[in-house]
Image 1 (spheres, rainbow, N blue to C red):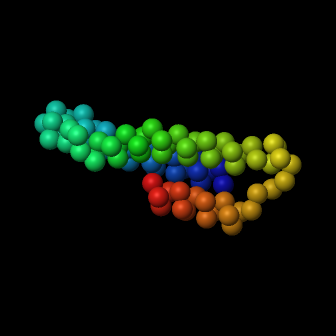
Image 2 (image 1 turned 30 degrees about the vertical axis):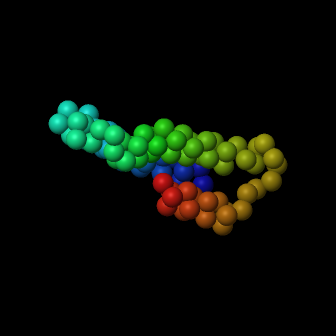
Length: 86
């Protein structure tokens, strides 16, 4: 499960990087200033990737911290719903 979250982290970070490249172009930055595109890029990069990294660490250390195994079905559902929501 941590591997899937880390792969999703890379995927979301790359998508956010592509949106950032569009915003770095001066002509597009002026036309996209104060739009939902900038807000989406900001939230994708700051909150989306940060929370995915936290989930990855949580699933990696879960058994060491609590001494029990987590449900794989609920973990997959959690990943699908979170990435789908992003």
